[in-house]
Amino acid sequence: MKIHEIPEDECRAVLARNAIGRLGCALDNQPYVVPILFAYEPDYVYAFSTVGQKIEWMRSNPKVCLQVDEIAGQSQWTSVLVNGTYEELPDPPRSVERAHARELLEQKHIWWLNAVAGRREKQSEVLIDPVFFRIQASSITGLRAL
Image (cartoon, rainbow, N blue to C red; front, side, top):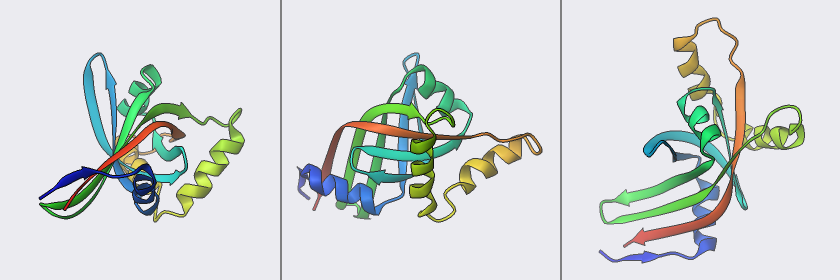
């Protein structure tokens, strides 16, 4: 097996054709990693959630990362890492960006289900306020094993 870096354009192609990744954030020197559904366009990763630990942590420390894999086998995989800054898209004043995020996410199968279903289990009839956010990429890197 040989592992090598892949060019940024290949990393961007991996992001564009995938919808599930792992979001990493940290607070008080404690990391937290969770799976998320996302939509990608150049320089931004868009996502949706409800208020909980990851949103609270990203509000406190906006430095985050997203890791996406394509795995064909133990010795044949591609992994892409996006480092960047969390940006919440409240409505208002970020109505245009929020609508754009929703439009991109609507192209993904049941993009809202995981976030809402998980919150419903904990708060059955409480109003669930959606949180749309994006990650502004500061770097995009990747590795491939063959």
